[in-house]
Image (cartoon, rainbow, N blue to C red; front, side, top):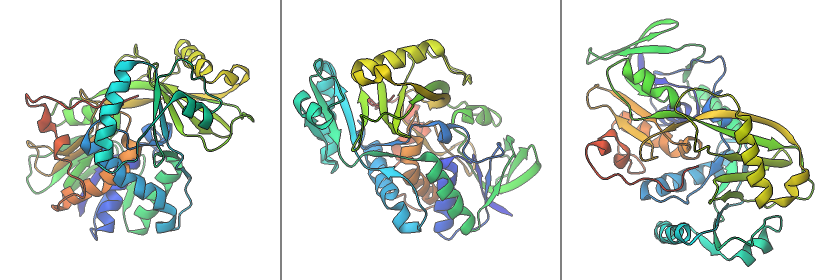
Length: 379
């Protein structure tokens, strides 16, 4: 008998499955539609992990997750790559600077060491950057970036060690919940029955939820990334840097730089093809901020999907209209960085215990005519 059916084999689904198993629960099955785990959003993300958020719940989820990421190898003996070299936001206008200063006060209230850097300080620490148009920077040394593939495999290993059953190439097409005791999962491999179900299917979550009559406020929107060939003139430490005015972000990757940004003209949909025109925009913005990239060569590029909510905050909780059906989706680009905290919080929720971080503000109920606390730092 399946006690917990986790739909989605990305890092969120695996983190919840491991959280359940680590708490001593059994009968856990993860359903993944692809032949390989984590081939969608997890495999295509930039790997950033930061506590510089504008809402208390996101700050706390990040603090919990950063501790987990940093201590993962020591705790489990599974090699992973995490560079705790900080996040650096570059600010070029007074309005953004004022908002970052206000958010910085909130972050420090939650114990996050956020520092304001002058352009001179930025240049002294990161000499490859052009700073003459900047007013300031916001830097947090405990932020960083990790290898999504390594952590995904680490979670998969832990799940299997704890008896979690992972079913690959099995697409869950419909969930029927009329039976209070059992949920019926119609899949590409037949019918399964489970006591509790968690939906963690990222950008595809709204499609699955419509199968049992729920409209999820979530849109799939394309993001794309490009990686350069190795660059000898750039070394470590190298924080994940965000040129806030244009939305460009970049960090070290395979000896070169990973470059990404959100296309403001991207349409809602499941298209994951590379946009060559927007690639040129990314490159030009990157050269403007890091002039030595003018002679760099691109190595590869890819596109993936964000699961965007109206307030750019995650959806975590259980459906009031569906007994024992839960959701962990809509991360708006923050799924990887919040996976450890979400895994333990949702595991506790499914078991009926108090989560280690209060996630009540991230339930669907927040859209019932209330003023939303929109997350400011989204890329």
